[in-house]
Amino acid sequence: MEAGAGAGAGTAGTTPGRPRIKPEHRAYRTVDGNVRIGSVIFGIGAEIADPDGWIWTLTETMDGTRTAAQTVAEVHGRHPEITPATVAAAMTELRQAGYVDDAAAPLPAGLGARDPVRHARGVALLRWMDLSPRLSPWYAQLRLRGARVIVLGVGGTGGFAAQLLVASGVGQVHTVDPDVVELSNLNRQLIYRETDIGSPKAEAAVAALRSLNSDVTVTGERREVRGPDELRALLTYGEDRPYDLLVLGADRPAEIRRWANRICLEINLPWVEGGYRGPLVTAGVHVPGDGPCWECLRAGEAERRDLRLGPDQSEDAASPRMPWNPASAVTAALSGSLVAHAALSLLTGVPPMEPGFRYGVNLMSLGDPVLQRHPRRPDCPACGPSRPASAN
Image (tube, rainbow, N blue to C red; front, top):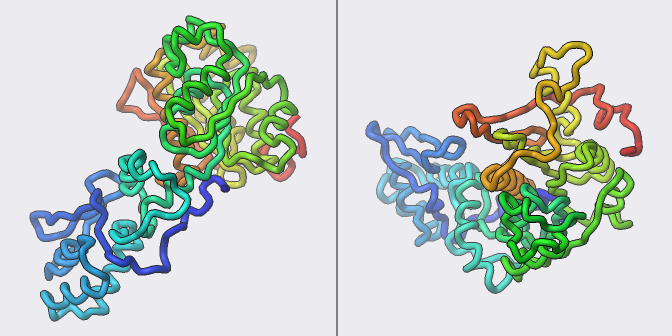
């Protein structure tokens, strides 16, 4: 499965057997007679002028108990001045806008026997956020079940992200970490327990993840990535690309994000990464060939910040590096959640994300969310036309 592949699965081309306004998108009438649909959440809702009242009748009639033909007949019967063709066209527009699904749609083949119960609430959220003309919200869950994700670094960010991916039903999750569990990890790495102290993280993480969801294939290995060639070998295993997505939670060696950027560009592998720098928690979303790469963003952000450093000063003068990163369970959980949300979006297309950006939260200023976007740089050494063939 390609990351984000099949985003149109179960979409346009077939008329719903029993068209229904999605429960999460239930319409209501405003005081001036307009119809608001899609909930009050920014990015989802819409308002429709309805001077004659038939749009409201249509949305009320599309309750999943009638066929499309019966719905048209009902609305036309109550508003004979509105032609059946006009009603049918409005139904199509509502569906194309993502407000309609099919109450009669069967579960797509390929889901497990427990999925309809286990993931019912998660699928309802996917349906809420999905504005594509999909007959069934379960196609997004089906794509998760077929996805293969590698999580490199199962600490604070990676550990939380791995748990969220497994809980969400990603079919195959492979974890990689070289370290053992230490007491100092337990303030933020909640995938581990006191009984895991001294055990390799890769082993303890696999056990914890398998106990979370036995329907997911979870594997792991204790392995350290010391250079780009080792990272390339990890991501390919001699195959063209065995994974759909890389989740990078590791923060060492210091160059690992640069290596990941170059190698993911080389093998066309989408990836997400994240972490915390004191109270600043962020995640980056990267898809080769779609928007700026990690190095484009880094260069653009360096220009934007203008740290006013002297000629002999490095960036560390403005943001000092420490032997260990100050962090808590809160910052680790936030970063892992942001990373997992981005990963699930890339795998399902819900909600759609335009890659090549960083987003996050500053815990010192919650009213000032983090969003970093910069254009792709034609002179980028990684994704520009003159980029080298190797990540070294």
